Image (cartoon, rainbow, N blue to C red):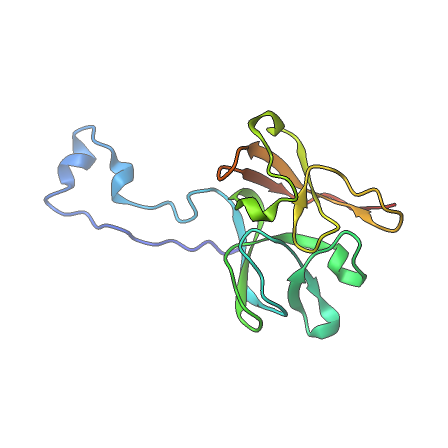
Length: 169
């Protein structure tokens, strides 16, 4: 997957001391995606409005567009590819986090994970696009690992995205 890099500052006489005298050189540059996650570049167009951090899947029946994944959905909507990396409206291109760390908003979760939930598996919810710590149990639904909770608490939930194989109930 391609990685984008951005130059935030350039080396100048004013900051050369930071580079040579034991200063914090990290303040002078960017490592691209500092969170260390892999992103599918925006070649996928959304088939509906999608919110940052929601679980998404490709639906080929509508021309390979991105939709909210759903554990009790139909067809390809039960095969998530990752989490939306940004909010978009229908017809816009979408980045998707396919692995690595992703900070998530509270509204992405059925119930916000607490600090005591660190290390627990996050599953694709039976509510389109959402994450849950409780594996689906409805016959005909899919139990699908999306990742591991790396940090918890309202406004601080971080998920290590690790899409697993789904199991049909």
